Image (tube, rainbow, N blue to C red):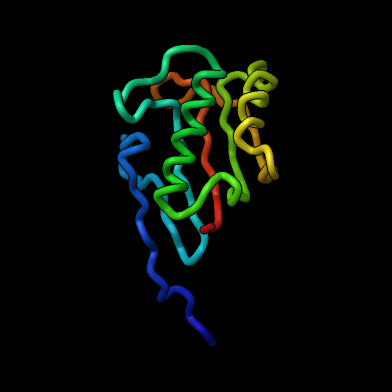
Length: 133
C-alpha cells in the first residue's frame, strides 16, 4: 500500500495577487492539484477594491486567479472546477460575459450561488481548483 500523504503540500504565494486578509494561503498545491482560495476584486498594487460594477470586479478577480495560477506553474486553461459566489444573481448575465472571456478554450465545471454578503462588501468571490500545466 502506498501512502500518498507523505507528499509535500506546497504553499503558493505571489505579490501579483492580493495578500491574504486572514489565516489562509492564496493557494496550496498537492502533487499536481492546485487549490485556490477565494479571490475578491482587490487590486494587489493598491490593496483596495476596484471601482466599478460587476464587470470591473469580475476582471480583477479573474486576473488575481490568473496570477496565483502562474505562481503555481499553471494557467486558466488548466482550471477544472470553479465556485462563484455572487452577491446578487441578477448580475449573472453580465458576470458571465466577462467570465467567458477568460475561459475561451474550455470552460471548467462551475457552481454559482447567491450569497447574502461577501468580505468588504464586494459583488463576487471566486475560488478554483486547477492542475499543474
